[in-house]
Image 1 (tube, rainbow, N blue to C red):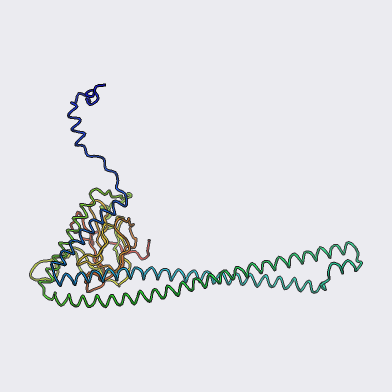
Image 2 (image 1 turned 30 degrees about the vertical axis):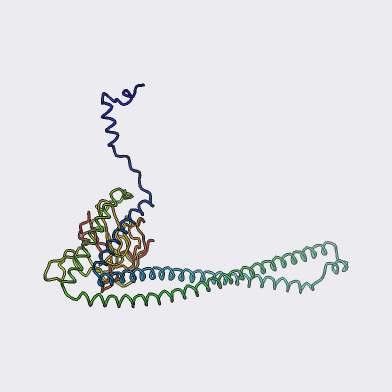
Length: 398
């Protein structure tokens, strides 16, 4: 068949069809989890490079921020390890309790078997311990002799059965005791690890305190504090813009859940009342500066929960916000969780509503302990108090 007949379709020129095919964008396949993580890692790298350039430009002040970042990252890792060790310790103690209970039950079984064996030995004693040969020589009636021999065999088999049962129970008690001792050694190691982690955390906290004192000595005036807040705000906006650009070709799997329909139905990420209102003017007299989110005071280490199904798109230290997690909920909506003590999720992971994602802290040079929380729509802040009406979850779902 001639080439022009193949290319012609309903009278369209072949050249036009060739041009259309050339400029038709290829169907893009859904990116894999690894590809998504790589794209988000690129955003992380760009932000880190930007922070490093800024720190070099700011001289000593930037060097202090770099020290603070490393100390708070380290503290976050140590607290995460501490939490895992505490969970392991609790699990070991529960297992030891279960094994102790099993050992007690086995000892009761052993006592019952011993009682039965004692009764059998006593019965045989009352039977005068006569051997089969002696019974045969007694010249008793054959029927009586037969019944006696059957009874004797029954006692013998029962006695052997109880002896075997006692042996098995004793063996199982030995295994359980070995398991208990093994778990107790694990408890001792975990307690030692907990002690070491707590000591390390104390050392890192002391170093962090010294860095904060030096930073506060440099930033004492209103103008300096205002400049820092402006830099923090600008850098956060750059991060959000880069994340939105990276997410354009990453499909959001909503699982039938639409964030837009949840206004006024969401729960707060932590227990407590915000210390400020969204849009409230901050305490600066020379220039108006307003809150873009809310700060919720809380106890260090308290759980932080995700407010809605989504994908983690950022989980790293950020200037001004410390250990920060950002979750994409689809349709342009994101939630931000700042000043965390530790982060429990990594970029690319899907998280459910009510899932534990972080712990409350004071990272980022924050003087108070609590959570900084924002909701953004296409990069612009919206009032979280209009979206979150329910109290924070009381139990972990992860």
